[in-house]
Amino acid sequence: MTDKEQKQRLHKKKMEKLKSSVDSSIAAANAERGVSILLTGNGKGKSSSAFGMVIRTLGYSLRAGVVQFIKGEQLSGEELYIRDRCPEVTFYQIGTGFTWDTQDRSGDISAAIRTWKEAAKMLGDPSYNLVVLDELTYMLSFKYLDEGEVIKALTNRPKGQSVIVTGRGGGSALIDWADTVSDIKDVKHAYNSGIKARKGVDY
Image (cartoon, rainbow, N blue to C red; front, side, top):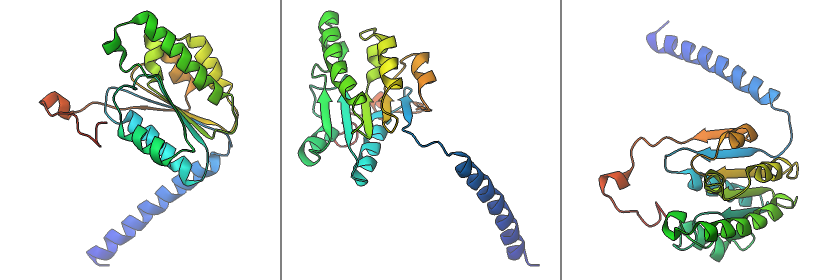
């Protein structure tokens, strides 16, 4: 047997073992229901990942809703695209911008409660296949919203509805609620090297 043939034989054996493992995992995943996803951590890409799943949802002609709890004053590429080209997506923003810019706790709490009411409507509507609650974690960390009320609504949503929550922190209750939790690490960020935020990449 040549060295090339030996490598191919070992590779085939390894891939057969991997395929068997993957096939077993797929066969074991037989629960049919919506999934709950928490995208957290200090790294870049949480909201971007969530909007990627909105595009996936639209690809199957399914219905999506997006609620943004922090952004609102500065336009983003996602907002521009969805508002202009995806009228089928329900899109709602808190509209006050970053809470560290407003520096108005009572006003921020009122805005958060108003925005949560819109989110709660989507969470109670089975026609939404996917609901994205962008930056919701901050509303819990800052105690702008009642954690028990939020977790209850997330848990009691329609069976077929998937929900994505994004943002740093948010507490252990969100982690316990979620089926999938991704903690995105900040290894390097251009901003920390003095590079300005880039249109189409950062916003």
